[in-house]
Image 1 (cartoon, rainbow, N blue to C red):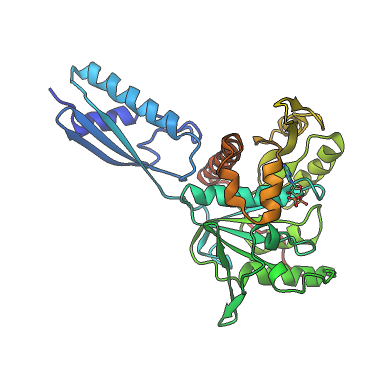
Image 2 (tube, helix red, strand yellow):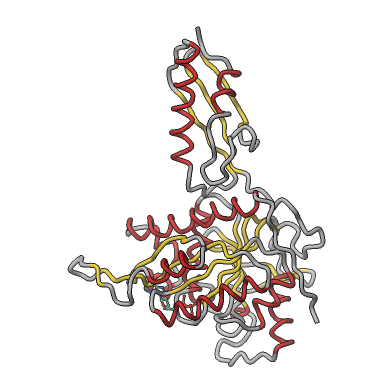
Length: 364
Ligand code: ADP
């Protein structure tokens, strides 16, 4: 006898989403169960198109269907698992968010400058977009905006309509930076309230449209902008970029504590410039590889992955051609993808667990 859709449903009750810890039926992820003779098709709606667990979920479904088939004495031919994705909103939603069409706002911070925070922000945003997520990148580093260079915006003309800034659409993402609104040679000196105002305008007066993820590249350290951001927008969480050295870890720890104090979940740590691969193919441990990973473990924060010092990465950043990071250097592409998918997984966990960060401080 052939399997029935009810058998498939029973099988799917036994398959857990490894990140979310519940079965696929209970999570509402099963969208289709179809039987065609001996062949079956199962449609699963993931909580993010960049799901790090796709392969495991597929294998677990295939196993569960075969187990169910043999338990009921049914034959089974090909098992087609078809994935779609719908990025879920956090369980609780602040209704008066100034960006109601943005599902997740993710801050990227670092204890100190020069550790690769902007580089990681760019690659996370583009990495998510490459998986099919609608993604924006806000250059929140109003003191030292990098996105004009890193995204190659020099030749593009900024536009505003009805007093709203129209984001630049490049490399598959939408982006806005103060670097395109001010003289590039001008020193950007902001007093506290002005920093607050400049950031607020960039964040809320940009016409982002519908976004699954808005990545916000923060200035380094623990100053005004993270405070403004956490007051202004409901954040799903923050990512900390850290190099492996002890001094970098010390500052990163302070950044973690700052987010905790602001009531923002830290979704994970990225260890950047973890090691260097020489022309001889040898890996050189310049800064104490694994230091940031140990720090993350010590603080009970997820570790999202490590990126080595990579000359292609630097070159593509300087040239404003970030898509080249995924073309022509397979290892780099895999490393970037791992960090991106790990973050997407953590965002799903944070938004499904019911934990949601409300802006608790009032803006003065
Ligand atoms: P931050 O935002 O923390 O100040 P940036 O992202 O601007 O740091 O990076 C500083 C410089 O280091 C940039 O020139 C960037 O291209 C380079 N860089 C960052 N990460 C790497 C890496 N993993 N390999 C090579 N160069 C890197």
